[in-house]
Image 1 (cartoon, rainbow, N blue to C red):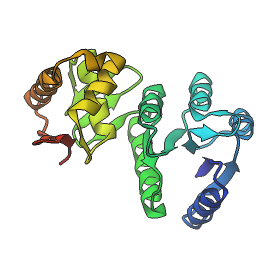
Image 2: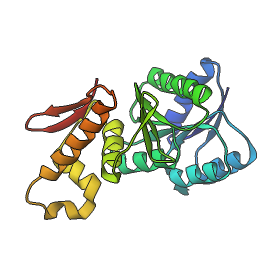
Image 3: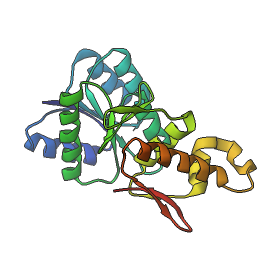
Length: 224
């Protein structure tokens, strides 16, 4: 299994390379945008570990290049804590998963193994959480393999919850993400509750477990 590690932090790159090589992977490295672009043009990989902040360019542009060339490598985004929008953009562009720095190498290996299993089973890029499957390329949602029709806001909200699973996210944070600069024009966040309630109803009606938990006085959390 051949991996390309695209990461500009030398210590982290060497640590990942040493660990993953010991797990039986054949690892190649790229520390800059240009190095990564050249390798992606010349070689095929099974899995790509993609840092989004690179000298010389954005990892998202590399992802666009990868998908334009129809390469079917699995892509695991390596992101900083404050780059939530980039994570979501990456998933919408066809990345399979993400991991946030700092992380344990054992978790990284587990994510890679899960990505490989999903690739072998599905043959395309999907975000999977138990019975929920999201296809970012078609902006489609399935529960127990049956399609669930969501509005654009409901889809964006579900993706936002999944990206932030097990974290408490505030109503303000949700409003800022879904409505951008227009969110502060509202007197309250009742519209967040409405969209959250509609999303919950549609998912549970499709036979999905209720993963959306209200954390009173704080916001919401998506968790088992």
